[in-house]
Image (cartoon, rainbow, N blue to C red; front, side, top):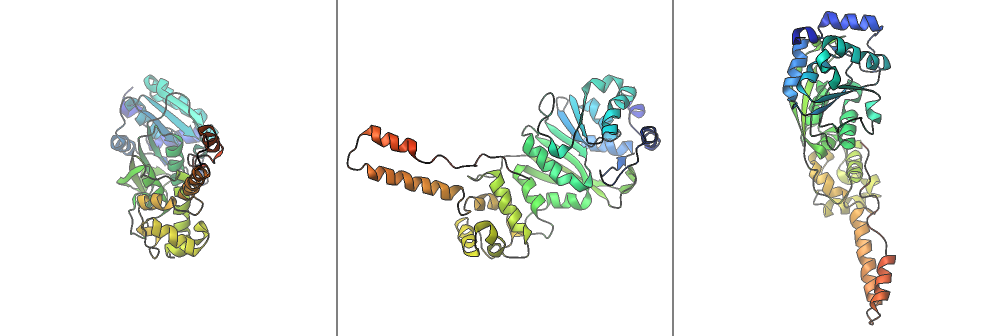
Length: 333
């Protein structure tokens, strides 16, 4: 079956929706793509490899799914709506029977995913519901380290925030947290007319490539905690904004100076590397714990300076506090 027959057009989308009794809802952010050229463009921009395992969140009636299947090894479509999830395999079997075996449909909330059947996913390509786009991307990147690339369609304003760089008014929590995982960039604009129903805003494509996080001895949860604190009161200086995070404004200033950050700066001035550095200096945090352990070890060595035996020295070492608690704990969004 050729591509012209396989992909969904405006009449196909409306017919499928009517047959299933589907009325797009704002609650689930349902705006179905009805333009075949747009889905071709999305797939072309995403550039999936033939061995990629692609996650598609919110496949809806299957417009993008049908375009992805011929280009990839496997598509795992995650759909929260049970009616849409149940109908998608039949749509693919009817319109692209040769590709049906490559599809896996998971009826679930993408924000609650902890795993997926089959091989580890390597790419994310999706038309994301506007109201949960950033949390979904961050959750999937945290849950599936195997994801190396992504191309998502989101509200244009959200796209701008996702790719914003330090110093601008729209730079904030989504910008920094996405930068923790790698590099995001705008990959094009999408008009309103390609959707049914047409949204009240324009859309944008965001491309992402995973990279190593910045060097830090803090966990991701600790880094994200200071990011959240810094932007919760973004008009304040970091000395003031981080007072709650550090315990006091004075403690925040000490942490900022230790990290080489101006206490009078604001959160929008810091890149993700600066936040990662700063997170290490939270009072009671990773460096404080390490210093306490080193102090305890030094005190232990002093206690045996009179020449007590190695067995006694070893026993004291085994009884000393362990490594930094929680440093490897997976953080939130």
